[in-house]
Image (cartoon, rainbow, N blue to C red; front, side):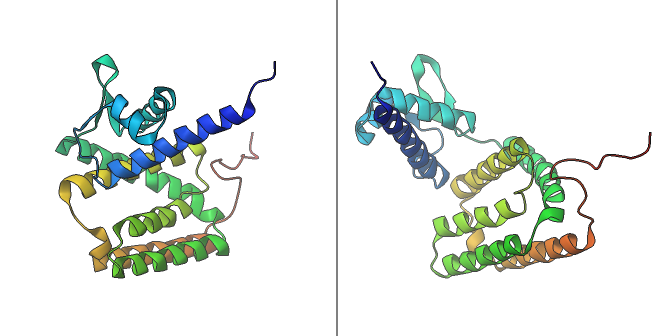
Length: 214
């Protein structure tokens, strides 16, 4: 008897929807840090069985946004100051490497996307649209990480999101309202432009040129 392909698509769609919505609520602080998540209540609120819900929670756990506890319970992750310091150090190192790999391979379209993301950030800031600003900011940085190896790119994004989570939930700061943020992003674009014109484009992204010497 043939398998029901539509059921598989529906299940995957449910997992993706649940994961995305829970992730957004955690990142913007609608579900506070330390909150104990009830699988029963979540399944009822999303109108799904526990199977796709558990898979979505597993994805959140892999991202470090929730912690698994006994009796199959899950809790939204909390931070200590030491966590933030460690995340900042890792992020600086890995994002610098991802950018170093990417910049020689950026083209005019990439730089245009970065400029467009900056403009979108400005528009969102004027509207006090925090979610819109963070989305544009993520798109901006994704451009100058874009040629990094997949695993490195994923780790940089994960660290950035963890950093945003701490800032939005615990520090309650508002980077979208800080004029210095605009200056910093403009400097990044200028540095990327300089890098694309001054560095040789040898090898492929994420690789080193092969030496011709024995």
